[in-house]
Image (cartoon, one colour):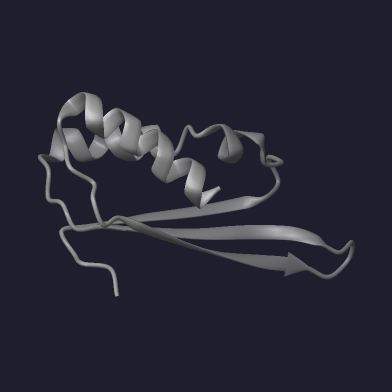
Length: 89
């Protein structure tokens, strides 16, 4: 899912002439006990660039509409956080 988000954001950013070089996404899952299944996913996308607020919103929305994310079951909680203007550690 994180790779898919970065890929679609990168394609859109290229069209917008925004450089997302160095962006990194991390993902964690939370499991439910009964039945055993994924209950939640938490994604953090850290991007060194500091584009305009308008460009950020467009790129964030693009990431949130990646095909993998849209394929997850609706009951799975999806917590997505974007951090702009910071170098990933």
